[in-house]
Length: 342
Ligand SMILES: *Cc1c(COP(=O)(O)O)cnc(C)c1O
Image 1: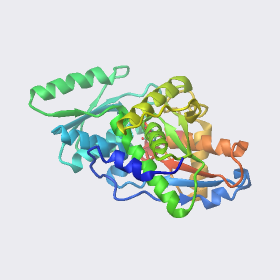
Image 2 (image 1 turned 60 degrees about the vertical axis):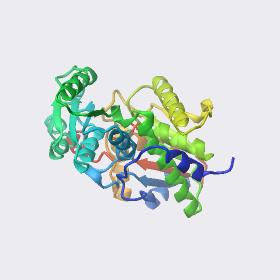
Image 3 (image 1 turned 135 degrees about the horizontal axis):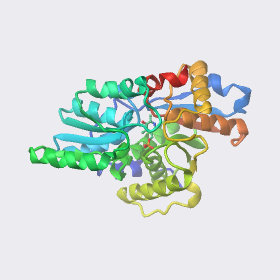
């Protein structure tokens, strides 16, 4: 199939979108790391989605471009969302609301596995308050969604026009942000005269994975997407990702049905739970930091990068393969997980 990036761009242009990124994010080669014998001649590249300026940056900004477009088109004046205490999505929703003069209410749940002082007070939580969001911290074990829906009713009674952001920004509309990223990557690869065999990402709420896969499919690209699940086990994550990818394809006017082999999800890096540090995450974080001066977060990027390093070391990819890891941001998480690194 011929590559048709323009077709993908045209399909995306049907949806309201508010620019939150300054420009295309850079793709850089990890030259020192790629030269290590253990990398078996593979060329490792990173797409720097952590270099997105607003609010400390991260992958949620791409989804928020379409979600904010949707919210403003609906006349919203207040953004409501929820997530874990150290949610990057909550932090970036707060930043985007501040930037666009909207109110923001965040409902944050406690982690069942971490409650040290850095986790409770530092990192994303600290930033949420700087952006001026209303922060509702729930007690241990209380679910966010019912609380959020009640709050929304209350706000509406006060005359506020609320827009509820989906968890992780990963509705089909939000996931369009990563279909747009697929167009961006294909355009950059074309400019460099490079073909990426594989794009590697963490999979949490599956929007990044689904958007990329849908975008690549519509553009007719043969680049594969490998997700490392950090939230759920492989079975349910496959189901959610498949369903979401089909929903994104549909939004973009495609009736394509994903072949089974197009969905690649590995949960070997998840560890005992979402947000639980693992030895391979810590080692991969140190490798990337010490070899290349780059930072990945403990919850998402660290685990996915560990998976990439393991698969390359194991010999899953032939010499000369071009592998693109998306750096999804989440730097504040390092400070919330201080005790895990020491
Ligand atoms: C949310 C998040 C992810 C996962 O993206 P999903 O679309 O939820 O799968 C990856 N990395 C970081 C830093 C994130 O905040």
